[in-house]
Length: 396
Image (cartoon, rainbow, N blue to C red):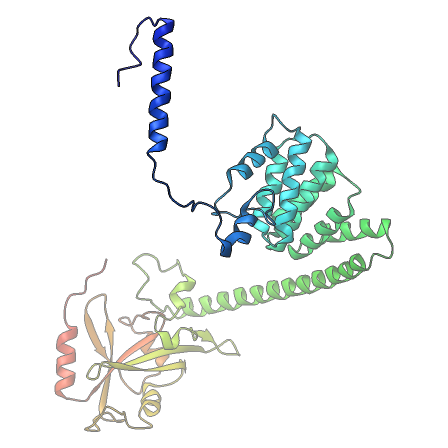
């Protein structure tokens, strides 16, 4: 076929001849098509499904991800075209969509629709009040109480006598524990309708909840004050005894921190050092490690007046399960503590009280607890333990 796009001057006779030729070619093409059965219609078993997709017959709006009929797209364009609708009409169209989604409990889609309606910039206060109130309801049902309250308040701004918005404000204020706002909203509702049962019930419920929270806050404040007093007494007791902590860096003796008292050993973490009921004796958590077996015993509440002998009597009241040779018994063990700052161990005099041991120049509280090592007396295990501990310690 010749190039019909080339620039040339056509005579009338040539134009008629070309048109006739093109008609003939088109007829030849159509005649040459294979005759076959038409199969593009709706199958009998799916005709109802296909009907429901047609914009004139559909019973529900298309959902996100659905194939949308081109005619529906066109109708939608007309519905939301700012050139085909006034601002009020656009706002009301979006309101209808939002109400549809609310009916089907698709609250997030409803929020989107009402938001689009608000963005239509209608200047009709009644329309805006309804949009904000409806969006408030959608937020409320997914427990976005802060957003719901804000929208309800905006609805009241545009329509001050809007009872639904005022009731929604009261409900949200209660959930957010904004008791004064809830009280105000309920009282304003009762001014209009003294028999408003829901407002009366919520007003009473709001008052009771406020009293309960105020009472709990007073209890918490009193308990916080007692905790602070106990901590100050504990701090004073520790500073009077000049007790030292592994985690306390040089020059920080005066900078006493509460975290220094928090035990790092899991079995002891709920039992930090504290004063007894009389506020005189320190009660310590302690760990007793057995290097030979790589496990530890824990005592959660040891008074500083207890001797190491008392501690051992408790530890060996029953034989250690892993002590096959029965070497670990009172009178047959030595107890050590480690000074990690200089990398050496110190033997404990078992007749001493814990307070005396803690007061020794080389003793440091480790990880919020007293840490001791127990080995059989004059044994190979004891010699290996002493040798392993005599090495330089590196601190970051």
